[in-house]
Length: 289
Image (cartoon, rainbow, N blue to C red):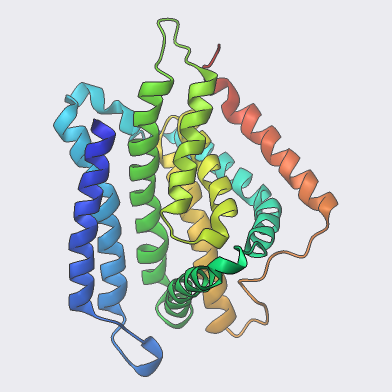
C-alpha cells in the first residue's frame, strides 16, 4: 500500500512538473535563450517527483521514532564509508564502460526499428541538452542543479523509498538482528532496475542497473543516506566537470568516450571493487537464511 501511494504521489508531482516545464518552455543556450529557468526547473522537478513523495510517506505513515529507515545519519564515520563507496564506484568504471558499449550495440527486431529510433533520439536529445548546459554554463550551478540535487532526491526516492519498502516486505529484520539474504538482494536489484528504467534510456539500461545496485548496497551496508548519495553525487559531478573541461577549457578529449582499457584491467578493477565492497560493507549486511 505504501509503495503504491509513493508511486501515485510521484506521478502526481510529475504532472505538476510537466505543467511547469510548459511554462518555462524549450531553451537553446547557444541561441542566447536564458538557461537558468530551465535548469532550475530540472532541479525543482527532482524535488517534486522524488524527494517530496518519499518525505510525505515518512510523515503520513510513520511516527517520528520509526523514520530512522530514511537513514539521515551524518556522523563522521559515515563520511569515511562514503569515501569507500566512491572508491568502489571508480573501480567499477571500466566494467561500466564495457556494459555501456555492449548495451548500446543491442538492436531491437527489424519490425521495431521505428521504436528503436524514437528511443535513441529521445535519449540523445535529453543527454544533449544536459551536456550543452554542463559545457557552456556556470560549472558551479551545474554541480548544484545537475549533480547534487538529483543525487540527493533520487537516493531519497529509490533507496530510502522504494528499496526500503521492498526490504520491509521481503527481508524483515528478525529477532536476532538478521534478515533474509534473498529478500535483501532482490530488493536491491529490483530497485536498481526501476532506477534504470526511470531514466528512460533503454540503450543505457545495463550500466545504470549496475550503478543502481551499487548504490543500493552502499545504502544498506553504509547505514546512512550520506554513503550512497555521496557516491551518486561524485558520479554526476565527474560528468559535469569532464564536459566543462572539454568545452570551456579546451582540453582535447571526448568526455563521452569510454575508457580504452583491456579486459585484464577491467577484470582486476571489478574484482578489487567487489573485494572492497564485501570487506567494507559486507559485515554490515546482517543476513542469513
